Image (cartoon, rainbow, N blue to C red):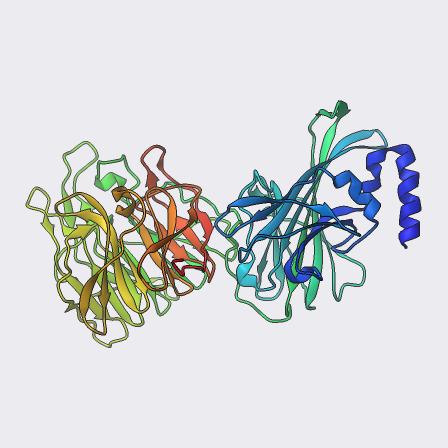
Length: 551
């Protein structure tokens, strides 16, 4: 086989030197995909060694290691017996990529520039599968995600779903090859039943003319590959949104709303979509919007309710709960008249009905809430009373959502008065993060409530400026408390609770947004605004590092 390929390669070189690539593609093997645990780049028909002489054309290739926080590090490669090889840096759950201009080829009347792209996902754990999320590093990629019956592959071009791309799969249990064309969402599905290493590739052509190294071309052809390991592809895995599947924007954009994920569906309630710094009943939403994260084609109105901004929302027992918020009673052109409300209600997606629940002891907005076990906690905020005096709350409450009769109970008085704060869970405790103080402006201070001792203690300050604590969002992801802040930083509370560990940056810094966990390693960011660009309609998925030792 090797002799035949070599002869074929020499014959093709007579016609055109770059033509040696035809039928070959760039592949990356990493981790368990390589026999020595190093990172290998192959030029072959699948993820396996081939004629080493064909690697000469890849001498200028750049290999990148992309960490979970999106940082790309170039790896130095050397040529060994049958591959380009590199040593990876110590970083868990990294992706390895290549994007390389191969050269100009001629086929019949067409002369085209050939570009190769490649990616390796070393882990067989579907929870770690993700996209690069950076088109500058990898403009053409295949993002796998586990479906209930089949493996879902989403093909992205410049970060957006690519329709009409032919995807080819070879690997264990496949006699010849599997082939399918992506739909309008860039998606194909394959039944990959056997455990082992799969070689997956996709094609894309552009009708673009240009020159490369002094030679003209009339089009560009792209091939992207994915080395994917399945540990036991026969197991059914619950579907979840992939971090690089393009999600439809939330348009119009909103701030200060409630959001939760229930049974792989994202729900967003209320919020402000009007002009910045001016609230009116014309700029408040009364809609409960939903987006199916398994097949995220479009947003739908699940239900409606009272117009609310600055509310809190949680999910529990398959139901959506909304707590408080304010309503604007003025028209757009009139002076603001804002009133904090005490209403409490839950929505059942199975019946599409709202149920009114016992009201909060007082009107409350600009607060936050979370559920630990069956207990709902509400902390922070203030009470707006139109032109009356604004009351900053120094109270906090709980309610047992599993009880037959819901009843609000007071918590020990928090040692602060703050609004626009975030609540998160850490080791079974409630962590109140940042906010605006009744006196002293914005703050990055945190406070921790322990339900066992029923006491509040001071926690470590967030990293960054005081504004990083204003309008942030917090959520538990794989037993780690994660916070996304005004400046765009992703921070994780260390395992000993002594400090916040920086874990990267979001693409669209925002505040008054919601950050929600998709699975053990990924989070979804919805809504919010940026002081420079205004409201942000794009949804963003981010990797959440699981390393928070604080070292």
